[in-house]
Length: 207
Image 1 (spheres, one colour):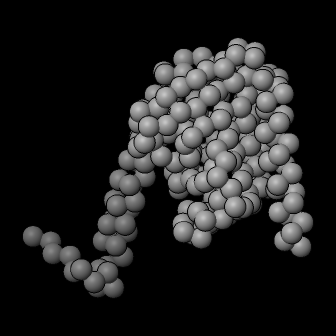
Image 2 (spheres, rainbow, N blue to C red):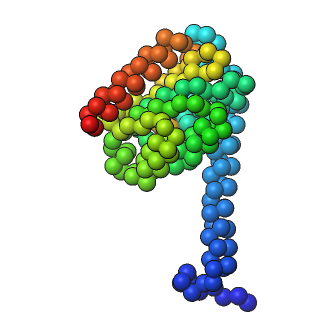
Image 3 (cartoon, rainbow, N blue to C red):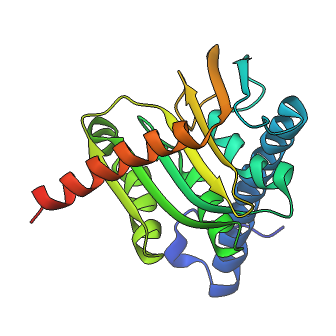
C-alpha cells in the first residue's frame, strides 16, 4: 500500500503533481458543469429574446442566477454576439468572472464595463481581485462605488439593444428574485449612459 505523507515537502514531484491536478480538475469541472446547467436553464426558461419594446417579467426561484442571462443571450441571438455589455451589481462570484473571460476570449462579448459595490470589494477581495485583474488584462473597465444597482444592459451585433433590471445580484440564485428583460434602444442607452458617467467620474477622482 502506498502511504503519502501529509507534509507536501516530503512528497516526490510526481505525487505532488498528481494530487494537485486531481483536486483542481475536480473543482474546475464541477464549477463548469454547474455554470453550463444554469445557462441552459436560462435559455430554456426565457425561450426567446424579447421583441422590440417588449418586456419579459420573470420571478426566479433558484433555477438560474441573474448572470446566466449573459451567456444565454448569445445562444438565443445566434449568430449575433454581444458588442457592448454594461453590468451594475452589488457583487459577483469567481465563476462569473471565469465565464465572462471565456466569453470575451471566444469573441462572444467585445467590450465590458462594470460597476460593483465598494462594500463587496472590501469584503470579498479575492473575487474582486480576480475580476479586476482579468478585466484590466483585456482592456476593459471595472469600478467599485457606493452602489446597490442591479442592471445588465447589452447591445448585439445585429443592432438589437436590451436591458435587464433586477432585484438580484449576478452571483446568487438562492433567494426569490425578480427581473424584467426588455428590448429597448432608449432603455439600453439610459443605463449605458449613467454607467459610463459614474465610471468616468470614478476615473477622474482616482487621478
